[in-house]
Amino acid sequence: MNVAFVLVEHMLATSMALPAEMLHAAADLARARQQRGQPNIHLSFVATRAGLYTSRSGVPLVATETLEDDRQYDLIFLPALWRNPQPIIQQHAALLPWLRQQHAGGALIGAAATGVCFLAASGLLDHRPATTHWFYLDAFSKRYPAVDLKPQYLITRAGNLYCAASINALADLTVHFIRHFYGSAIAVHVERHFSHEARKSYEQVTYREDDTERHNDEDIIQIQSWLHPHHTQAVILADVAKQFGMSLRNFNRRFLAATGKTPLHYLQGLRIEEGRDLLNNSNLSIAEVAEKVGYQDSKHFARLFRDTLGVTPRDYRRSVRSKLFSVEATPEKKASGK
Image 1 (cartoon, rainbow, N blue to C red):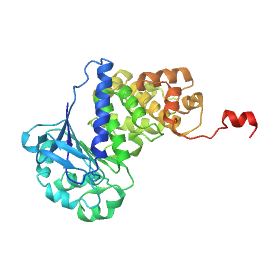
Image 2: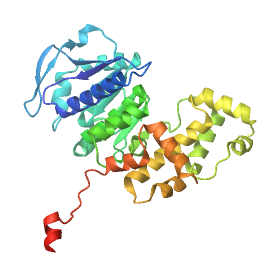
Image 3: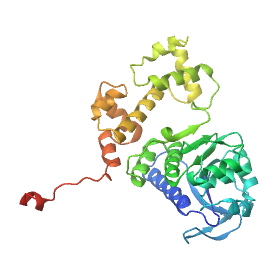
Image 4: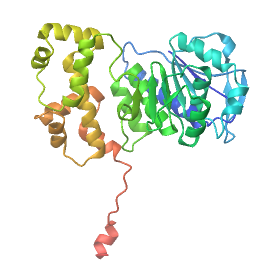
C-alpha cells in the first residue's frame, strides 16, 4: 500500500507527522500479530520538487518523491496550512491536476483543515460535501461557492474524498483508514495509544453523501435505513425479512452481496459501536450498556465487543478514561486526617 504525505511550505507539521506515526504503528502491530492478508505499507513524502520543506513551526521535512515520479498512490494526505492558504495553493498549482489524476486512479484522499482548499481548487469538491477549519469557513464559502460546505461536521466524506476540520478530526479520520486497511482490532489499539481521552467515533462526527454502503440494491438500502434507528430493540431478522417481502434465505444472500456483511454481523456492528459510545460517555455499568444496545446477556455483549475490537468493554472504558483527572487524598493526608 503506497501512502503519500504532500509537503508544502508553512504547513502544520503535525498534520503530516501524526497520521504517518499512526499508520506506521498500525503496520508494525499487524506484522507483530502476523495477520495474514495485511498490506505492506510504504510511506512517502511527496512534493512539487524534491528537497527540504519547512513547516510553520520551523520543523523541516524532506520530500523524497515528486509529482513527476508518476506513481499511483492508495492513500494521500494533504496538510493543514497556517492562516490564509491561498498563496500556497497558487504556488503549488501543479498539485491540482495531480490530485485529479490520483482521484481518477482510485486513491483515497484526506485533507486536513485549510488543506481542503487543495481539493476545492482542483474542482473535485464541486457540488460535494466538505468541511474545513472554523477560522476559514466564511472565506472558504465565498471562494468556493460550488462546494457544499458542512460547517457543523468535523469530517465529511464524498466518495474517496475526505475532509477533516482539525488535527483532532484528522486523527479520527486516520483511525478510520486504519480500520479500513487493517481491521477494527488494530484500529482500536492504535486509537487507545494515540488518544486515550473519550472521543466520539468517526461515524458520529462524519457527514457522508450516502449513509449506506455504496451499492444499488434499493431493498437492502431500505433495510439498512430501518436497522439504524431500531438496532437497540429486539430485532428478529426473520421478521425483518418478512417485513420487506423476502424469504430469510434470500434476505441473507442479498444483504451479504450488497454490503459484504451478513445481516447479523451488520446488526452486531451497529450495537457494538453504540456500546462503545456509551462506555466512553456514560457511567452505565457494562450490564446496563449491554441492555441499552439490545443484549440481555452482558457476557455475550462482552464477548462480541472483544471479538470485534480486540479488547474487553471493561479494559476499553479504563483506557479511554485513564486521562480523566480525579483528586484523592494522599496516604499522608489520610493518615493525618487532613
